[in-house]
Amino acid sequence: MQVRPLSISGAVEFTPRQHVDQRGLFLEWFRADALGEGFGHRLKLAQANLSVSARGVVRGIHYASVPPGQAKYVTCISGRVLDVVVDVRVGSPTFGTWDSVILDDNHRRAVYLTEGLGHGFCALTDQAAVTYLCSEPYTPEREHAINAFDVAIGIDWGIADLTLSDRDSTAPSLAEARAARMLPDFAECNAYVQSLRETD
Image (cartoon, rainbow, N blue to C red; front, side):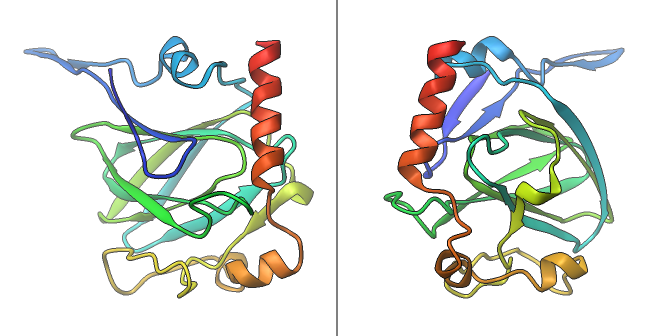
């Protein structure tokens, strides 16, 4: 499995080795040991999600309060999506920046996001199915969103005619969320991740 850190600390792209023959293909889309080697602790699996989206659907930008936050390991099992990571951790050297990876059913890459990072994706095909492993279960009172079209972040979603949920379309800007003290703190996120390493 090839591992490539993204430009935001705590976000990593994984490209699996695919074994193809006349029967089809086989791959390991998640390896706990590979993730543990890169981050010093394993992903505590608490929930697995599947999301199926029509072309142009944007889901995000979502993040969870830290602690405990919600780390995610994301891949696209059908179709193609632009997967986006946004650094919403106040005090981070890359605060307010974003990076992206194309996830599809060809290269079958995956992205890992540590606790405290914002995440979203846009379906680039008529239908796209995304599955992701989560370190914590969904807890509504800890879940938050940033507006996916915040001009201060400037995400290029790659296509026009985008569709969002009511919740996502009315989400605050990054500046508004910061002013409301809704964003994770970089130092607190790092301390929490360090505590996971010490107890793993």
